Length: 312
Image (tube, rainbow, N blue to C red; front, top):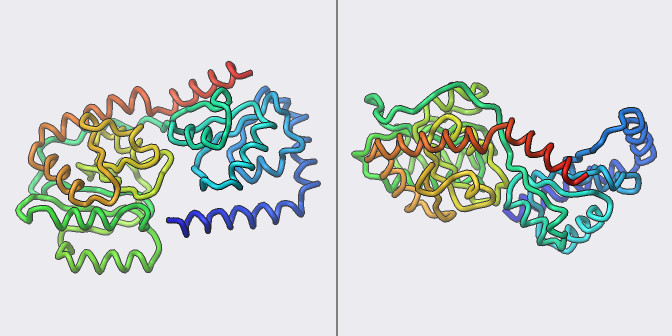
């Protein structure tokens, strides 16, 4: 995970250095757009872009919409302090990101939170009673070590063999890690129960075939979209207490939260939802209610606009 974070940081630095060579053109183009459009507010979403534009930013109408976490280093603390002096405020996509910004010595009065939201999907409710294929457990997203796929496979290994379950893996990832994961599935004797679906563009089709969504993330994911999507489809979620996930899953109500890298706890919650269909149905229904109130794009845009107006 540390390697991934450092690699991402090095990539951002290389991109910034490349853009430094084009600074005059960048500043001129940006100024022309701002002068022509005359916006009331300007929202930036990229760290190295806003950093390169610092000298010409209008402090009274500039905001930084922060989508990701950054390493807790003195380097990023200095960068965020420089940005803070040139903008009106930071808008975090979750309270987890809000806290990470304030830990860089940014005044709380300049940091706002607007939890991400998505479009409301068509009606779909997971039935508490499934057909003869049993309960389908789904994991959605990029396939990688930091996503906790290995923890889910180990959890499946721990489940009783007489439990009626299957597992679908949606998404693609690094070939070497995927190969290791496939080998582990074979070693655990789960080949007949695990299906590799790959990337699925049709979200309705995908979530219609999931009864329990597992998000065993090992990383501090700021606001995983899969948690929003699964909730909208009325699917109970088993997730780790990492990043913004505790803000998206109400433990015991819309799903369950477990500690990271604890396959035994994941297995325990999966078995509970398999054995008690009424609980699965109730949590899925609560997830949908929660999503329709707090995880919609309409709520997100309304709240974002209110924050901009109040700040200005």
